[in-house]
Every structure is written in C-alpha cells, then in structure tokens.
Image 1 (tube, rainbow, N blue to C red):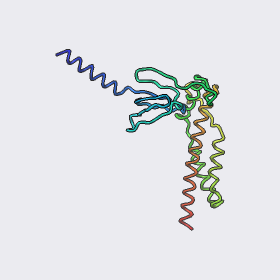
Image 2 (cartoon, rainbow, N blue to C red):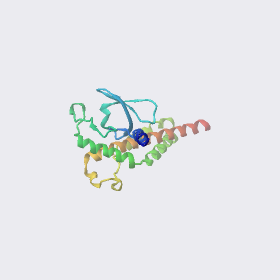
Image 3 (cartoon, rainbow, N blue to C red):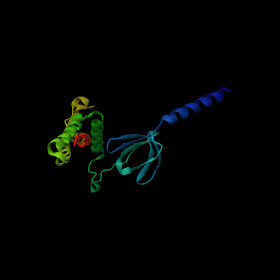
Image 4 (cartoon, helix red, strand yellow):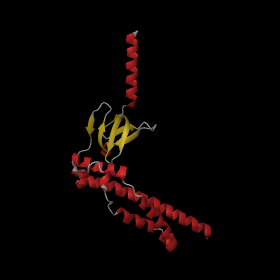
Length: 199
C-alpha cells in the first residue's frame, strides 16, 4: 500500500514538473521564445509558445541557439561571410545582448510625440502638400544613434564593446522609427479629420 502511494506521488510530481519544463529559442533579433518544439527538419523548427494554439514555423536562419527542456544546448548560428553572417559566435552573442538591453530599457516617447507634431504641422502649414513631412521626420530620427545609458547596463564595460553597441543601436533605431511612424500617422489622421469637419 505504501509503495503504491509513493509511486502515485512520484508520478504526480513528474507530470507537474514536466508540464512546466519548456524549450527555449534565442532568435537573432534578440527575442526569446519559450514553449515546445514539436518537430524540426533541415531548415525549420515547428514551435508552440503555449500562448498560441497554432504551431509557428521558424526558419533556422533566424535562430541563434536552442535550449531543450532536458538542458541540451545547441547553437545554430555559424559565421558565414558568403551570406552576410560576418560575426563570430561570440561577437553575435554580444550583438544579441545589445538588442535585448535596448528591448528592455530603451524608451522613445519623444519620437512618437515628434511624429504627431510633424503630422499636424505638415497639414496645417502645407495643406495636403504636407503629407510627406512625417516621412521626412522619420528618416531624420532613424538616422541618429540613441545614447546608451550606463545605469541600465548589466556590465558597464559592455559600452566599449562595438558588437554590443551595434546591437543596441540596431534595436533602438528600429523602435525610434516605429514610434515616429506611429506618431506621424496619428498626427496626419487627426489633422485630416479636423479639416474634413470644418471644411
């Protein structure tokens, strides 16, 4: 009787911890996906993030590494200058870390505000000829590298690592551009809406 109880308890614990174990994909864009690998072939991984009912098909070219739930690690990224993958594995690690730091800490509210202002100003001062103004603002904003704040870095020495800095700037500029575009659309829509009401 006691053996049966012990068996039931261990079975329950196994099922419980198994349900929480997961595979982890680290993508080259810095994103981390947690879930379950259902299958893989030479070019793709079929992955479910638990939050979705559908299975995502992810190209292995987008993946830096995979950590299986059993603890096994596999790095997919390989340096290949013929296809533009110029970084070594260690250099790419730093680049991805830069992306992740920007993803976590970089905020760009002024880009959104500037986009809204450019959208409104373009229409107010130039009428419909001002439609390209937000696009011009976005180009200007995206051309500038944002400042990296040391206080947010897990290691302040990283600011001297060019691969980390490049990764940080890459994601931060992407975020600035996205916010500027969003703000520009809001500004244009608001201005056109007001003009249609009062004309």
